[in-house]
Length: 306
Image (cartoon, rainbow, N blue to C red):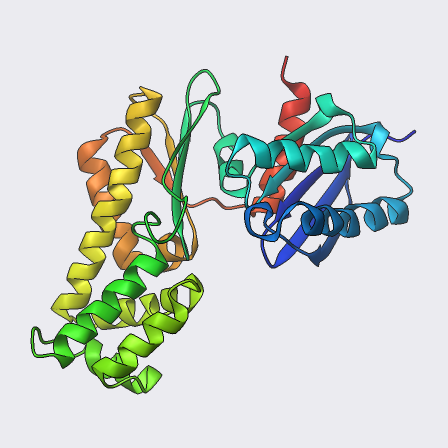
């Protein structure tokens, strides 16, 4: 049987699979509907994984039992029960347990460099992962957007709604942010803001979308929008600081990931300033490869570990 390596990047919307031979030559890349174990549940997730993996291996004429290393970087792997469930999906398909690594999709960048390493993610949500010198993973934040996800798009968006509400009620003034918000959304009264929040509080992407308005207003000099960015940068720095304390490491690679940290240079530079001051010597950068390629690299690296 032909040996191979496989990497998966599975998010709530899309699942991706990339396969290479033992020499590193890419054999194929595949896409199918994704899932998140913590929200979609076991049965739906099992079906989605099978729909992605089985047809792909059949097309490449590969047997799961000949896989020499597979890394599944998946959304919703938040607790040991999620990891066990996900592992069971692949063992049922015929992958060998000792060739299988299941991690949260945000962890994958921890394996790009030697130990120790840390990744801070700020997109719709936020979370921070660190991998210490012993290979132990430490996590801070990212459990629920009501009590967590600080410094995320949801957090920025919620602060925008609060700031506009304060302006409309006469408690503050945002000469750039408020008109941008009203022109973009048509939400121009406190009653409409209240209705929108009540309808969308559990749909965090619907509130996170206002983070773009905060960025646009901050770039135009709106003081409230700039302060919103400072507050969120403070929150992200807190996640980094607390994760670094758990790792007990002086120097490490720190990766920035997620749409806000990659695309919002105002927020990223604020975080960078705090990191440089609070953790001098830490190397910060944005990954130059995708999470899918990171997962495939990790699969190869796991295979060669003693």
